Image 1: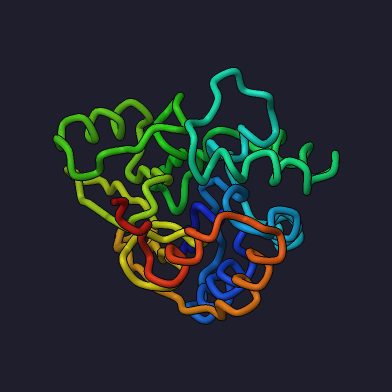
Image 2: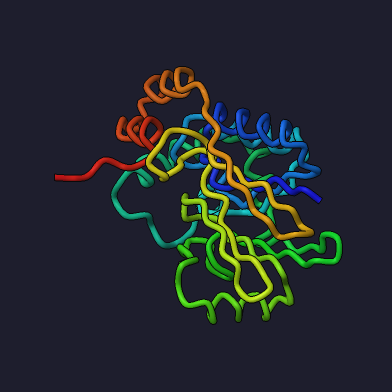
Length: 234
């Protein structure tokens, strides 16, 4: 089976549409979304509607939870905090209920191979998993869940790593990629061979930047969309 994997959509509708079109061209059988549908970008409502209209399997990311629930710990000053309340105000009860309905993990067998997916780390969607860290820690996670595949979204950087007989991977970010180049990240996973292939999908920046400016969202985001990284400070 060919599984399309997306993560960190971050309310960027043109990027999501381009990524889905690319996955369709790849002939994937199914698409899985690893959370953070909203946050930062100007299209939170539209992205949510696109995901549920397409019937995509999705789990909750840290941003989805922060928007859907009044979490006690505030965000630090910065772009995230500046867009949180705006994002929440764009959504009606129907969209908020959808975010609250998302589970924290995806667990399923594909052709006899068990796949488990989280945003961040198990029990902590805001964590940034270190996929280049010690192999034994990743192997312990695979063993804990009896899985051959462990998908961890949230780093905004695509990476796949074989650990023992299994695979650990992050598909990168659709809506706010930090790879140093413009485009939406997507991953195609062959669930039989455990081969992961990454796509960098270009999309039209014009509508995105127009909406970003029209809503008065932080202009620093333009640099991320154009160049795939936050500008250096100082």
